[in-house]
Length: 376
Image (tube, rainbow, N blue to C red; front, side, top):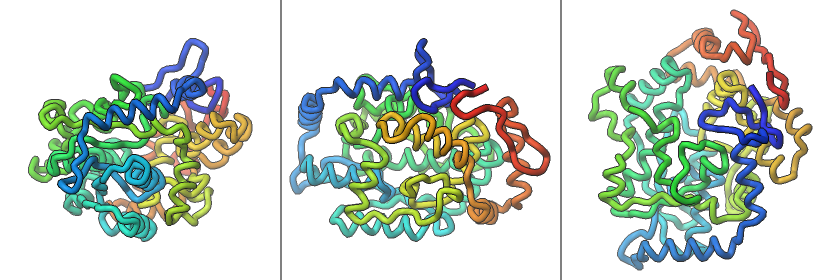
């Protein structure tokens, strides 16, 4: 395990590759932003939008996937108020046991801000069964739910006849998931190659005995369907010079976003502004840490280091302290939902923990072997 020379990105992140100088793709991309002509990018966006004629009062100009959180709230407001488009907002709804009151309030805030919102709600029994199966097979309960989340927007774009899909950040450039890189910095049609969506994404669900008819919400449209309906995903983050976690949160809070009030020791959420519509993502971030050696705090501090708001040393201290943070209450409520005991949960987590990176006792706290910022 090695770390980027600039930030705290480890080379264990899936689909990443460091330069010969030991720098991660996200830091290399950030360096290039200093030379970007943002006016030119604005003109590129204007030209791009001209290829998708505006519909006036006859329909929606674009579709945006939203949760009601910081990124989607900023996107919706910017697209409507700055670009002058009429967006349809598409939200995948979690079942009542999973969604937080805060998440419901934030979606209601978007509706109150004057947006049209269509809500997709997959059958809760299938959702629960797939979540349990995802956890037991992959120690990743979100394997199925993320598939539904990503699939819902292009599915609805096809149903409503809206070819332009606006997305947030480019995971290839801004996170370093190189498999998702498209023809241009704003082309998002290769999003299908990210880990969650690629390579027989439904196969394991069928093996688990789920009927194909029950998996319709989890089916990402094929490249042929994208072509037939002329769908284009466009990353808005590529056009915004101030796109960042903190800035998006600031803009959205000013427009009514409700943030998390639990402390970072329970959530690993340094600013209380991430994944606000549910809390179980916290335990998935903890598990990600045990699998790959980085969690939610690493992703936070990497951006802050690149922006010059944190030193690498300050980032190391935060990552060392909070990267595996997760309240036992979140674990207990998740286990109750999928029908596992907490002991069975930890047995599964220990089974999937990376033994090269961690010492894994039968009982007790899992301990890292690596030094944050240095590696092994």
